[in-house]
Image 1 (tube, rainbow, N blue to C red):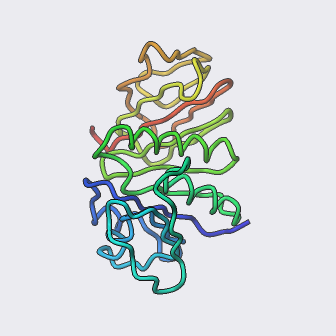
Image 2 (cartoon, rainbow, N blue to C red):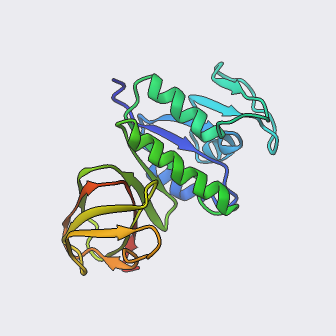
Length: 212
């Protein structure tokens, strides 16, 4: 199992270079989806892998042999292709950057990619400077050092889920959330160590910056 984290950088027009610099670790394996390599290099990092059809960006210089050119007509998004390949390489921890803003359907597709990561037994989250998004399966998820942050949770990839929330302004004990009623929106974390215990279904979490 690969011990390093895989940081996947996309090419959203709202990508913040400072967020990339702040979020990346020195030892991250950096994989860029299409024009995401431009943002990585602006942030001072050379990608380990670049994948894309490059229909909306220039083809990158193949500096280290780590460029995969995909056809424009394909089933996988560039980001999904990277995730599939990196799961095969043994990565179990993913950070997605440059994935929100721009086209809402592309943002939603990236949420689906987070769900795919969780479904395959790995951990993944998405950050954009405003919030962190994470898809989870059954089990306990601990949220540490996020006191006073905004929080929302919804079923994702299923019609309903059952969960308990501890350490939040609005707590829940074995409650049910359904896909057609946004009961889980606009909560707040009030503990340095909050818990989400999902007992059935799947869910997506949105953790905002402090005092949002």
